[in-house]
Length: 92
Image (tube, rainbow, N blue to C red; front, side, top):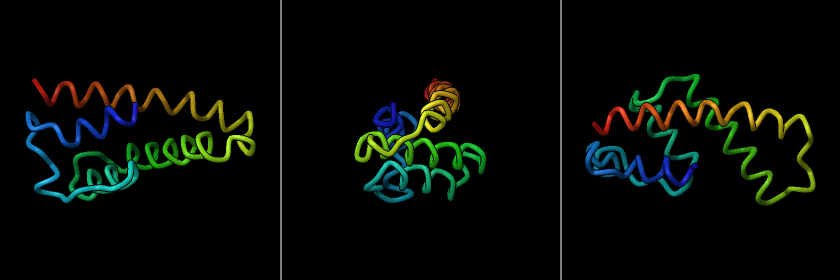
């Protein structure tokens, strides 16, 4: 899902934001740049930051994640779905 967000950031049909905003090296930097340039609002930015943190926790320190963090992640995925729909609308 996050790689799809990375692709949307670089999508030429939307105007490649890389040339205007810079080239992010992490998922978090993608959303920092989108927020800085007012493509996403504060709430979306905070939700994506938290989701990226939880994704990294699962990927790199899976033995530390709690059940409540997993439940939180499932709830945050709804925000990603909304973000993807917004990107799709921008591409039309």
